[in-house]
Amino acid sequence: HGADGPAGLECTVEEVAGTGAPGGFRTRAALEADEYGDEDIVAGRVTVPAPGLYRVVLDSGDGTPLTQLVLAGAEPEDGPGLTD
Image 1 (tube, rainbow, N blue to C red):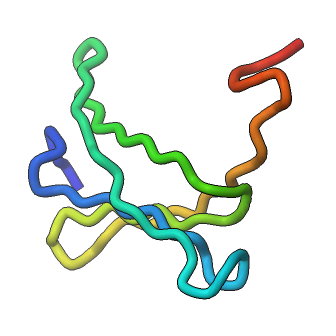
Image 2 (cartoon, rainbow, N blue to C red):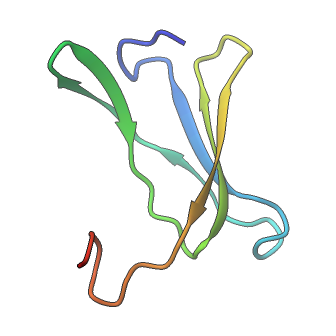
């Protein structure tokens, strides 16, 4: 939606119904702007309580929020990151 920074954007992450307890997990992500070269990037991080299916919604207030489904898996026993 053409935002140059996090001002005016709201990002929520919620557990998709049926994958957990009734009322499930829902939180707002704190957004921050990062610059890499000539591109402006807005990023947010959230830690979810359990593996499952989550809906990420980015709303700029223009009536057409962006929505993405994300499948979160368990963290490997040896910690985060890629392993050989």
